[in-house]
Length: 371
Ligand code: ATP
Image (tube, rainbow, N blue to C red; front, side, top):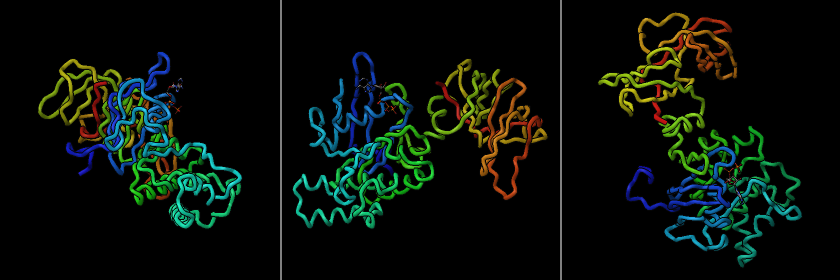
């Protein structure tokens, strides 16, 4: 079982009701959060949501206006950055341009008074770990962006911090290299077992890499969970929207019996059947979250259906190679997005502009949100 599901597990990092004000502005507002040893934890959110401020308070570059931060049981109030068991890797790699790769990596160790042979061994180990051994003698300007990023990682890990803080670590890399480097970072993190806390605005990056994610907005945490939990069980429209694609359909709960909850929706022009109980009483406003890949399109009205089947017309088609996406205008006027995998070779999009289609989904495919 995972530590976050274990009530007896001791958190390694604890934010306790942490607030950070800049003047009258709340950058972080009453955040409580536990992170466990060996996690790769992601703080995810849009620009200005407070994720970097949270990370900087953990590093000791900012002090909370209220609340407490503990690392390994120790209250960090007043502890300067260099006395914390943390190290920060910045988005701009901040390598010394005139020093070779190995001198860059060794830099912090010299200051700490390690012996020459110890430094040599540690640097060699680190460069091997990030697969940069053969570039040891090069200068930063002789490296690609991805290679510089790996050197920066080696430099921030060589002192064996208990916690590595990463602020948009892959921000400067192009998409292909980012994807590859995401896996490398995870591998390195798993090998070392260091706790990583990462800030990112990129939901795919957070989902690929993180053990758990805190989704932030306006200085507060909206939800904490594993990538799977957040995608499958979002607690709000905000999270549902932030992670992946979703159609949100507003409606009113009109019935909730043993078999189905029924949500009547003017948006979609009919009743939506849900095969699990939902929160709320009759008359409550709710939102049904429909993921595009959980919806199906058919030309004929499926005869097994009756439930969750709405007529419309294809308005837009997107061919993405592995997927085709369709925007369907329903008779109610609502536009709904459906995606289908192109699993066979020569799969062209099955439908074209103006095609009359039925949009349908199983009663267990939707989640229902009350905020
Ligand atoms: P981004 O991805 O754009 O960096 P972020 O989520 O990391 O966004 P923060 O850097 O944590 O956001 O900033 C949160 C809010 O606090 C922003 O509105 C920012 O303008 C404000 N802020 C941050 N640092 C300061 C400061 N030193 N003085 C005043 N306001 C600040």
